[in-house]
Image 1 (cartoon, rainbow, N blue to C red):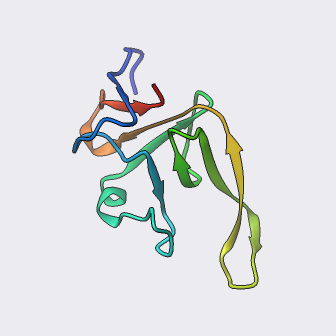
Image 2 (image 1 turned 90 degrees about the vertical axis):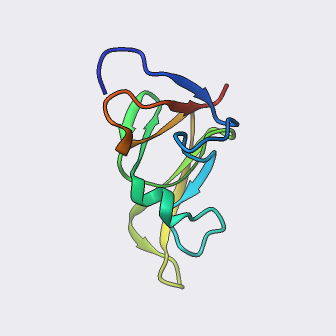
Length: 103
């Protein structure tokens, strides 16, 4: 992203150019959406762009990240829930995409 201020869009705004409020990369989750994930979703958590996010919720202000290489008894990765400000955008929209954040 550039130094310019991106367009801010509330998380509740529905639109094709804004990522959903809650999204997961786990196909077993009810919040999984392969079509939106294929577009590429950028996540900024606590003013840092993260690429290791398993699931996020903008309105509730949390993300889930994998806890190392640990697995549960069903073979799913163990995750940690971290709280803080979350922003999301679609990466396929170029340099200055609309950003969804709690607002």
